Length: 568
Image (cartoon, rainbow, N blue to C red; front, top):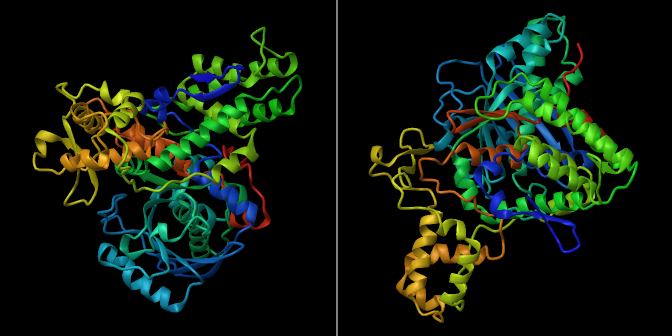
């Protein structure tokens, strides 16, 4: 529910409701999402991405090198293509075979860089990146769709949209590793002024290059196969994205980067509140912008061929979105909503929609309203960030800290940690798969719990604060309670911030992991058509509809999201 100020102007939504995992899971891609924000940056700055080398044989074995030039810095993407093998293929990090491995490096690719990457990338965890490497990556083909596309192009015609739209990609990301992994350059060393200094920008660039590589590869192999081969139609090439699968590790990201999560959510909620606070008046052209966006989103959902298990179906979301069109027309033409005069037209529409639409449909509407305040959104984007480290304020008293906890962590204090199912699960790292896992505590009694027990830690800290003198400074309190140092620093460091920590006991039986994975994948990353698998993994499409590198170079394609099926 959106709050209102004394003058009736819409404010930020109630953070206690917003930070429920199921509400966070409903947030949809927007101008704040990483893929959309980074693509807008590349288009605005007209990045120049081109192939420098594509030495790949008919068996798909060889080397490709791309040059990526921003206005101030050049990067290189070195990719090694392999003949596809079904043995050892998996989307998990324990795989032994991939169809492509690559590295994103600062600076132009040298022969030494290429040779080093060719030797080290196959070693994976035993390998070591060069000092200029930002990301190591891996991807696999969608065998059926890739082969169908290859055969169609080789025969001189375009693949069917039915085949393409069944998964919407030719290759899927199976690993984007950086920030020191394998010896890659740590992101904090880049700084905010670096070309890749924004949130997840290096990973997002590599994901886009995977999309381009997959299209280049299928065209290249088609030419090897037949001299009557044709390239992908540009409209179809734009429609193709890159597949992405994500699992439980993203929950650790949410817990370890609360300042970043708070900064992102606060910026998004601020933009929404400012859009809702506009007084448009009869015939305002922004009504038509919103109507156009809603129609596009409805068509996108109507053409969605994915099958969803627990998420709201695209069919329902399309119906919900279309139900808004007559209401918007009424607001534009008459200044009323369901016959009632309203001052803040979009706020009235949002309140009506929140009460009647599915959460995903409602969040789609809010995401499109953000498009009505583009300059404000882009300004807010530049301020998103936050350091991971917390320091303790030694002079804050026990009474002052207790008051903060009582006000800002009432949800944690009221969580029943004595319930039979409150600690049923434990988070650990698999020895064999090197992956985060969540399992029953009784089945892994010796596992070290890697998850943050936020409600439990808060309750223990609050109990010890109650037993301490109210005027005791934290310096003295922590001398006798050193185990609380991390939580004291976290509570102090996040004081007066409200969108940082999902209100959940992640060790409880009723916690649904997919909710927070979906927050990261859909809301922050901007992945479309996400499907859940066993309530733990998400599979979706990144850069679905994104412009080609020729479009980017020309500064075209800003409205690429919600792509419509190309006509055939």
